[in-house]
Image 1 (cartoon, helix red, strand yellow):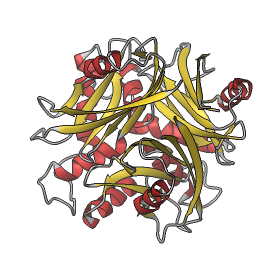
Image 2 (cartoon, chains in turn purple, blue, cyan; image 1 turned 120 degrees about the vertical axis):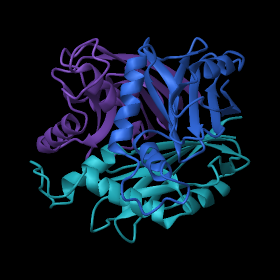
Image 3 (spheres, rainbow over the protein chains, first blue to last red; image 1 turned 30 degrees about the vertical axis):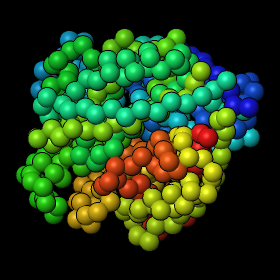
Length: 139
Length: 139
Length: 139
């Protein structure tokens, strides 16, 4: 019979940019007792976001980070800058990526492709602790 | 035991741009009888979209709107303009944001962060009525 | 009583760009025996992605493709180019669109709007076979 489990993760990236936390999700999943289902990952912030991306090539990660720095740059003429120059770019980069990801689970594992990792995309320089809500439905 | 509930919302933004409808979602959730679960919000249009963003600073909202006006502008050389100059930019801005959001629910409330609101992002000038499908699974 | 069903689709786009596979989803849904629920579509790649977009106007599709070619172009100065000039743009275009879509189901059909189709967005020139995981919860 289907059931659901919830959990809260706190994550702090070591630096701004893409921070792979696939292992933390996999560990929680492994001890949840659910082998088939749907895992939803939700980021409770508007200046950090989620992204599924290349997990093997550090150069791809760096290109991604540079790309978002370029298309949503610091130093543009933003009206909102209460919290400094990285404030509004953080909201824009979050808007262009994801607050939420839902990933099917099979045999106790997320059905990620070989080269897919789940990343926290930290957009603030001071890398605050981030709160991620997890929801799992399955059996 | 898990159950599901569905609902349809009709929303009309007062102006193009970001329109906060968190309260309408919260109201429906409160009377659904589900306290723990997963709420999915789905926008049934390709010229309006969904976004979770800053709910407190009007300046952040205005910067977001200006940003999308700039990166997916009217007046570019689009092939598709059947419905006027705001037609193709509406599709582009929708593609860059979201048709769907899934938000975990705990204690009868969406687990939004303090500064997160759920917005309809209206990309057309004539702000038609928009149809939003809701799905809630939980108990 | 709620139940869940999973499935795997293999899709190969005939050309790079937007490839409508709504019919394949609808066919699987029709034979799943689930009439009310939530369908999650998950793309197991970081160089192809998902998008819900205009299903009627080929010109809108072409404008969308040209737009993403322009904002995440080939030939920029990328560090990561192991797999050729379309490698890094593929990751960027995937990051700007979606790895996953969840769509409510009612009366055995996705609640898509009249003009909405579900597209695989193929970003590589050699259009490899793509693996899409489906998860359906409902009754």
